Image (cartoon, rainbow, N blue to C red; front, side):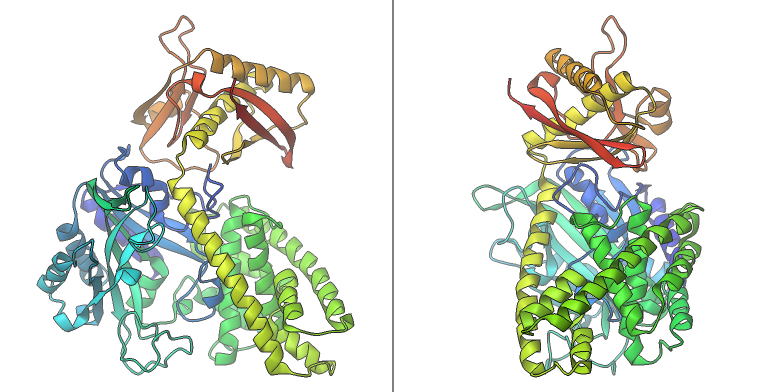
Length: 609
């Protein structure tokens, strides 16, 4: 079964169960400097899982393009990718386990026609604080899953929260036990060298390649309090996620996701460009990395991201450069392959995610980065040739700064007669690499956790201030001004907007003065849920990349019953906002600069009066 059929079947199935389809969030989250990318469909739903009312109701479903970087070094095996689509359905205080588990089982066995005898499940074994999930166990048994195919696992495997296990949760975190479903590809598969459970009996979480997780139902029902205790949330939620690519692999009964229809055309293009076969195992890892990384890069560039040395731009740069190294290993000319891959990815996904002009624009940006990297390769090679002392730290610096994989560096050193102690160099390199990995994991975990939870008072004030700034820019500069992006921290706001030239000092003064006047007027900030069409006809502005559902929240700053009969600002937005502008303090523009062709950027600061 092809992927787009699975995606549509999932949406149709849960729509018939009373769910509303919500738009996917952008890959680069708005107003959230603490998480790099959207990595799951639930990211945009955290406030609603905590009890806030969602404008589309209590039953929601969507397909969310996602980026996850935790497993980037695992890309190249049969099941890991950086970009993927997450199929998700949610109950916000409505149904719970006795509906969710049978529905997902029905979807797998009826809609996708998977053999129920190939399905294994896992459930939460419990802790001192939270009871063993016998309810899910009994539900699975009632559906025909025998006891020997139901596995109890500890919190490390079958508990979800932003921070990890119940013990790792911090005050304000929400979470709960989960139940995963695995597809069994059959005995006799070759055990992966990176198996975490070597010499142990095969089971769903052994990562040996026999089993593939295809769906996870999380039952979010607890919140961590400041005293360290878990308490029941006012509502019990369901948060389900299932990878589209993995479901497609299961329906084809092939554990290699790079042979599903979303990847097969890309692999074929790479085979033709390299004149090498994917069936040759020595080519597979490089081909998979190229296909995955360029697909991810194309989706990121489509959203307006460009390679750089900072945050999301750095990740994009790393994806492109890593794929180029793999192309070199396969004797591929990158400049010839990229246009073909871009067009093929467009053909695979069509107008659901891309516009007609996207392939050309995207491969130009990626091609420019490739040209720059090829110059960098020359610098790295020169450094390797002239450095008097070769050690593992140097090799890791080459890997980190120039994108040189260890195996290529070793091959070059061997060619030049400079490879003296290969084992020692590998040990030193691996030591540096492990230190870097640990730092990266810690940073990634902190960003993900902070981003989802941060509705602090300061961030809320800055978010409200962006609405005032947007309205002021349109009033002073003209209606051509549209928001092109924003970024908020606890110290400042950053706001990107369309405008053809640098702002004058007089314009900056007028914008500041208008924003501060509206703050001083202590205008009320109100919210109304309405139809999208009604909101747009009423003059509500929308975010530049955001897609909306049929029902939206519209935030208004000002009093429509005043003599003017108009509000100062009216935007479609999810929040958070203050109740009155007078709480914001005084606004100051601290910097104004170019952010791209026809786009200006303002940095602003709020301070107490």
